Every structure is written in structure tokens, then in C-alpha cells.
Image (tube, rainbow, N blue to C red; front, side):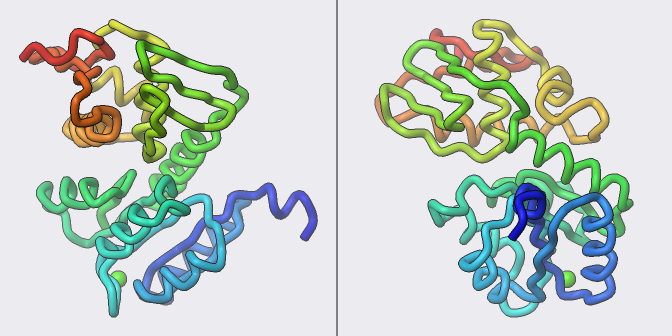
Length: 238
Ligand code: CA
């Protein structure tokens, strides 16, 4: 394989509607991505075992195994734990959205979605996973983020974070003690051109907290009622 091909991000499309797969493949390849596909949940896991995609576009309603279950499996395996997942679904209810995010999807689009919107989200998510040139180490209290190695530890213990939680923590580590509103965090972490509901921030903060805080450890993220969140050794005072 020549080097240029390998350096192109590989996007995996898991979808049982053949026409949609064809359309997504065409447009993703036009944007410069490599594409692999799976038509059902079981095939998705098989392909994941053989290939190492950089991002997965995952339909919720799939034969054999649902997208939700595939997402759970992705998060369960160490090799794919940090793999970015965009969930597609025909359901539009808020409860389902939050449920989708809680099972570990990084982003969520309701069908029918606009293609430019999906492409913007793919780009944004890949940007977050491959932080451009920012190398170095960020530290606050016992939390250390090694940007080059893409690794986070607390008290030397490895912390596994999804790409969104990683970017969220990176941003908070760059401004310790500062309180940010949900909107500010959305702009900084998701980017201003992406529409995400403010409540999504709460979901990712909750996941970040869960990952960061060990059993006996203080909560390092402070919730400021009606204002937002801050990285703060004083912890939550609400
Ligand atoms: Ca489907």
C-alpha cells in the first residue's frame, strides 16, 4: 500500500440500506476518505476485528444486532474503546438521543440527515481524534495528559477516554479553574459550525467524571449551578 493511501482516514459505514451505503461511500471517497462497509451488526464486528477504521458511521436499526449493541461492543474492547462513532437513526426523540450518547456514541444524526451536515461532523470528529500539531503535556493536580502519546493518567493510573471526553478534558486542562458555560464548551470542543444540544455537554461531562474519578478520589470537575463546569480540585459544591 502506498503511503498516501494509508494516511487517509478509514471510515466504516454500518448500514443495511444499500442505496444509502452507496451514497455515503461515494461522498466519503470524494472527500478523500477510505471507506469500508458492513450491512449488519454482526458483520460490523467481523470487519472491526480485521480493519482499524478511524471512525464509524453506525446505523441504529440494523439486522441481527442493533447499532446500540454494536456501539456497546466497540466500547467494551480495548482496541476499539476510543473509536469515534456517529450514530444514525430514524428516531427523533430526545430520550433516544441521550440513550444513544449514553451507550457511547460520540455524535448523533437523525435521518433524513443532510449530507454536508454529516461530512462536517465526520471532519470535526476526526479533527478531535487527530489533534493537529499540539504536542506536549498538560497537567492539573494528579491528572496528566500526554498529547503526543494521546494518553491520560490520574495518580499514574491510566484513564481511558472517548475522543470527545479527551478534547473536553484537554480544553479544561488548558484553562484550569475557569468556569465555562455549556455553549462555550460546545464552541470550543465541538466547534461553532456544529449544532449540538447543550444537554449533550452534560452527558460527556458525566462520562468524563466517571472515567476520571476513582472510588476514593475527589471529583475534579466542579459543577456551577446555572453557569457551567470548571476543572477544580475543590470539586462540586452544589
Ligand atoms: Ca437501517
